[in-house]
Amino acid sequence: MDSKIQKITPNLWFDMNAEGAVNFYTRVFKNSKVGRTAYYTHAGKEIHGIDAGKVLTIEFQIEGQDFLALNGSPAFPYTEAVSFIVNCESQDEIDYYWGKLTEGGDEKAQVCGWLKDQFGVSWQVVPTELNSMIVDADTEKVERVMEALMPMKKLDLNVLRRAYEG
Image 1 (spheres, one colour):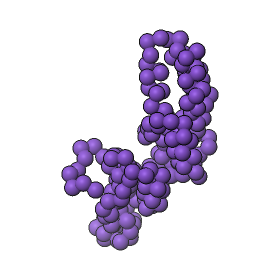
Image 2 (tube, rainbow, N blue to C red):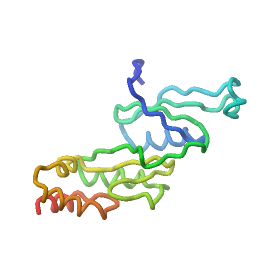
Image 3 (cartoon, one colour):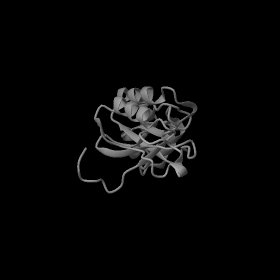
C-alpha cells in the first residue's frame, strides 16, 4: 500500500470478521491488495471488551481505492443507505461480480442491481452505460429504461439497451 494516506478512506465495521471480509473482497476483485494490520492492546479493554492481540484493523485496497476494515461488534449493522458501486463494462463483468458478491448474501436485498453480501455490505453492480441512459435528455428513453430496470435483480445490459433504443 502507498505510504501517502488517501484523503477520504471508507472504514468498514465488521462483527469480528474483518479478516474474512478482507480475504473475500481481495479474492473477488483481482486488482486488490492487503496492507498493514493493527492489533488490539490492553488499553481500552474496559470499553471495547476485546482481548489484546486480536486484529483491530486491516488496510486493504480494491481497484485503487483504499479501505480500512475494523473488527468491532454487532453494535452497528450496515444498511442500504451506503453502498459501493461496481461499474461494469460488459454483461460478463456484471455476471462475475453479481455471482461472487451474492455468495452467502441476503437474497431479499437484491433489487435493481443492488445486493447485500455475506457481511451485510451493500453493493450496486451496474453497467457503465446506465448512467448515460438515465440522464438522457429524451425522457421517453429514460422512462423505458427505468421501467425495464425497476423489476430486475441482477441487471441485464441487453434488456436495458433494448429499452433505451425503444
